[in-house]
Length: 346
Image (cartoon, rainbow, N blue to C red; front, top):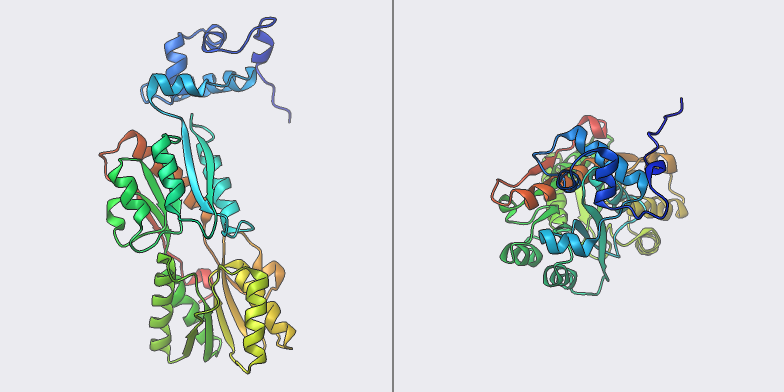
């Protein structure tokens, strides 16, 4: 069934440039009302906002960012800050998509600010604050005592975090309960009869690495299984690097029957390395991985996959960042996504 448009673009006059006055004329609403609707003002009815945004979209109206900034002091931009080392195939791609979708019905736009793996992660934060290039910042891969959070709080820049530091009670965040994932993963391998387990954890400097290893160690002690957490292989190393590093250990005589991976790419690399050594997943060993989009069981149906709802994370972080902008003195929005036993087949 086709959807008929109202044909707002046809109401543009010859040679007319789309402006607030144009939207005012087409909608029959006053220019200040149009402006406030586009700014998502709380006193404007939702159906009015929808109408104004639809007209603006159809006639090709683009706000003058410089003018908006002069009038309001805002940029209408939220910046997601990411390292270029992130796993864009799965986790990061889904996060960007969900954030963008959540902001699509607001006047704010998402930009991605990146930094190199060997670069000081404070650099993009200082740039955004000092140049006032964004109204809010969304951080990823937090550390236990994250200097970026301290800096943003000191400079009164609204922000939200995908992850928690040691001071999570003081700011907005969305986090996946990686301690719960670590515990349930080891328990699942134990129920499958696996007793010699290795783990590819995230880099130690990240908070979620600490959480994941804590849960895994607690479960290993409870269920009496052997757990080795590699110091020289992380779940962020990428598929090829994980395959090569693990293959070297297997050639050196390492033996195990269960492996737990903190990312999709590391789980794939681990499976390929083991298969190269004649091992069969689901028979000689079991592997557990975490993913943001269904992929692992398409690669090998025997892989045990725990879903991390990064779509929900993006939607919540967008909401939390908006709240931090509009109500800076209100309690911060926070959510912890807790994995279930059913989610890992227990």
